[in-house]
Image (cartoon, rainbow, N blue to C red; front, top):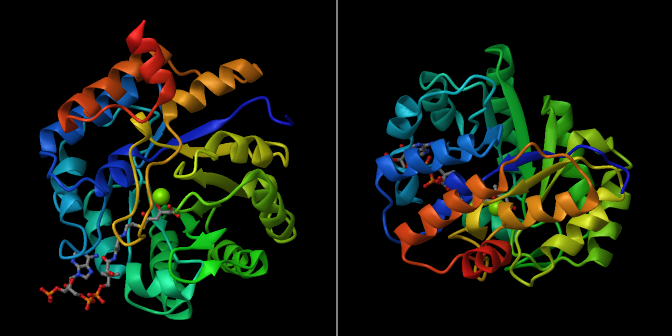
Length: 298
Ligand code: HMG
Ligand code: MG
């Protein structure tokens, strides 16, 4: 690949847990985050301040954020859907917020209860305020390849939203294959369009592994020089408003894969495996990480 160092952005405590039906107590969420820090992760999306009527699992975000012992050098961003969520994030002294317009009308309506354009308008208000307050803003675009409601998505639409997010001042845009339907081929076609409006170091890859394509999609993305990757401990994840969405690319599998490429991650795989076991044991689930399963079975 063209990259020698990869920045891993862990989304397990947010994307991973938001899709779990059984409420995960605050102290378990905090312990998971601490274990991820101990494994060496430096960017951990730790909560979302969305409407509790929409995602009950994330309703204790303030308690999570106020009680995590913040380790030096670790970034604990949170997801916010609107100014109300942003105000909560600010009270929690975060350094970074993430905004998340949809790449398709169908998903925008289901996930945010508004059109794509209206979503962009709301997120711009958040970005303007956050930048004024000195916070970093990360943008996501969801459904970058396919939408559970609208079907295949034109890469030009995703490029346009990416450009809007960069114009708002997002330091990075994470391209979300929310339902994991992408393939190396469709990811390449997407990136050709998006890289006409963004530099590789302004992009991140956020692949759900629903169809088992996460790692090959990633390799396709790395070949374009993109060097930030989102992943989720134990392969947890999904979105309650995206029918059929399942977990993200597992962080354990990502780290093992990067070792193989000779890319330095500074992650302790043994501690990562422990963090994955901790949360899957709590949830009473078999881990979705193949690497975690293989190592645990030995
Ligand atoms: P709405 O119902 O249209 O909003 O939802 P509203 O403004 O009419 O408010 C309804 C109620 O929610 C009100 O309470 C508000 O105060 C409250 P009431 O007056 O009825 O008591 N409310 C809030 N409470 C706390 N925090 C807030 C907040 N906002 C409103 N921030 C809204 C619109 C955007 C709020 C809703 O649709 C929502 O919360 N959506 C988020 C859904 C979500 O979290 N989805 C998962 C994350 S996205 C994802 O996973 C994809 C990603 O991983 C990338 C990828 O995979 O591609 C990022
Ligand atoms: Mg996601």
